[in-house]
Length: 312
Ligand SMILES: [Zn+2]
Image (cartoon, rainbow, N blue to C red; front, side, top):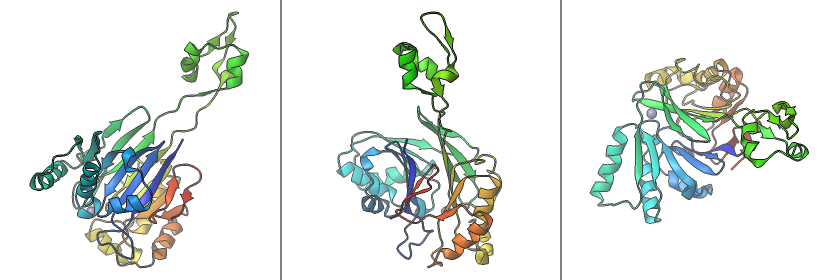
């Protein structure tokens, strides 16, 4: 089951060194979720071959421009490409007004519906719950109301062994009950324990996106044990004071969060334009948390054992 994230943009406020503002695509079994939409996101999607027809959910962490200035351009292209199916946008309440104002003054009438879901940054909330996954917010501490997002795969059903279906002539109607853990009684009244018929499902996987935030331990418990964590790491230790003033984190702080939350792997991003070479950030993070990777644009990370699937 495909569950992976592709980095479209990984820089902080000012694009530099061919690094672009924040944006990521999460792919869950072919269903796409866009997380933040900095300027130029649609160009990045084209470059990395993202099929935008499969994108139905967009999540915006906060209203600093480097996290959403690409949104209206993307929506306009959807419209010009005759998108018809609805699009869900989750973000700060004022985002709806921003979108509507831009379309009002360009006399644009969309051919598709936008379902806007206002997201408050007060307490963690479940903002999406479907048959495959939940998305919950993380309350971050930044200069504006800001949320991160946790994508959690739902508990999978047990896997029924095909040879047992044959061996015990298990009828189709009870297959789902068995996948849910039921035992089976055959036609002779013999009880076959579920353990003999099935194997345990794989552990549900999870991805957390921690957008802009000052160092805080307030969400540690919520991200405890996450498989793959993205955490901003705008600055190196040398600029820790600047990180504090601007409500951002250092690479070392991001690593401390990953370590304390016992996550499996960490991706760091939202790099300041002052760093041409990102190796200092990677080194400082790896000193604390060795399983750190840079959010290099075009790279795809599996939320699984093989962390780096594909390099751009
Ligand atoms: Zn910000």
